[in-house]
Image (cartoon, rainbow, N blue to C red; front, side, top):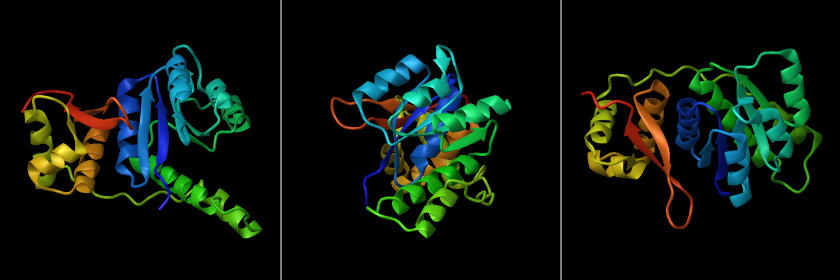
Length: 223
């Protein structure tokens, strides 16, 4: 299996940025390399490491996300509330592979990311056929994933919430999994859903070396 797809998330709203990062982190084959809230912070992150994909808002406090996309050496998708036709055209001209209008269901972003992974797999070959080209481009606009019941009241969800709220410090998915006795993948799925629903927030834990690790803490400490 090829290496994970490293993603940069850029959004001026830290809650929205963390929500998008949670969706990315819940998908197999993806990892969140950095979450930033300004163009300057994005440029700093880009100077320090390479990314495969950037999820970028248009309206940033110190500049335009579209201008940032023009600078990127990696792929990009625009995630924004901007609906002006000129902005959509500018994003396409800048090289954005997708344009998602907020607010959107988390499954929409998950489906686009899964399609992007397929796009990369198809185009990983040294040469491709015309049919491959069509398939790769079609993968960037997948059909919406069917709605799945949100495990809003499942016992596992409650165990995850209690574990994070009871902890003295933010927890990683692996730590949550160990604490309540479930797999890391299951813990990650529930944590991402809880970030999306606004019950938890996601941060990045930076160590001395290696990739940052996602960690989770409650937005509120009420029981």
